[in-house]
Figure 1 (cartoon, rainbow, N blue to C red):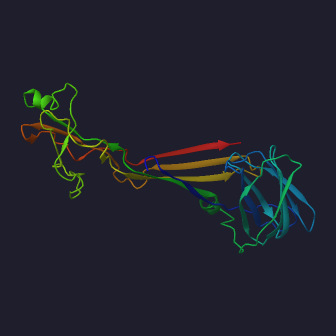
Figure 2: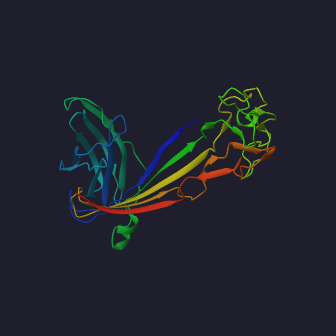
Figure 3: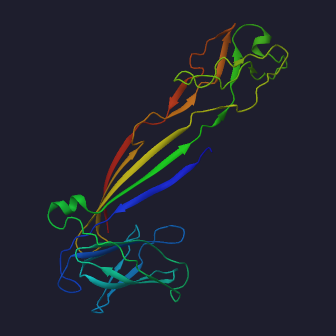
Length: 303
C-alpha cells in the first residue's frame, strides 16, 4: 500500500558502572529502566524511589528527557520501586532481586493515566543474572550505554497513466480524437508481458497512438512507479557525568539509506512518436533516484 511504513524498531544496550558506596559497602550493581505512557510516549521528570528491603534505605532519582532512570552503586539484595508523575497513577514494583555485579534492566514501565492517589502494583519477574559491562578504565566509556535504533520503510510505487504523443504533422497525430480534448493511449499488447531490466519496467510495445477519431482504450493508472525500501539507523551513546543522572554527554551517529542501495523513484511513461518510431529515449526505463547514503554526527550536553 502506498505510504505504508513499518514502525520504528529499537533496542537498548544499557550498562552501568559501580563507583562508590551506597546502600551499604558493596557497590557493584545497578538498576535501570524507561518510563512511557500507554501511548508509548516517553515520560520525563517522574520521581522514582528505590527502597532496599533489608535496610529500608531509600534513594530517589528523576527520569530524564528520554524517560530513562538509573540507580548505580547498589548492593545485591531485594528492592522495591515506586514511580510518581503528575497525571499518572502511582506505580509500585516489588520483588526486584539484584545479584552482585548485575546490571538489572527493568525494561519499559508503562504508567497508567490517572491521579497519584490511584495505584498500580506489579511484582518484578526473575531474570538470569547478568554481569555488568566493563567497570573500570577507558573500556567502560567506550563499550557501555549504547542505544541502537532504526526505521525501515517499505513503499509501493504510485500509480501512473502512460501518455502517447506524436510529433508528426497533421491533426490526427496532434489530437487523435479530433475533438480538441486529446486522447489516451491505445493498448495493443499486455503491458505486463516483459522481461524486467533497468531499461524496461513494462512492455514498451504495449501502447501506441489512438486511431484517428477515437479516444484510446487504456484505463487510468495502469502502471506503477518503482516500489522501494529504505533503512535508516541511529546509534546513540550516553555518558553520565558524575552521580547526577540528568547530566549527560550524548553522542549520536545517524545513517540514512544505510546500505547505500539505489532507490529508483520514477520511470519514463511517455511515448513520443515520429511516424512509427519512438523518439523518447527514457521511455520505460528508470529516470530518477532518491538520495544516496547520508550520515550525520552530533554531540550534545544534557542537563
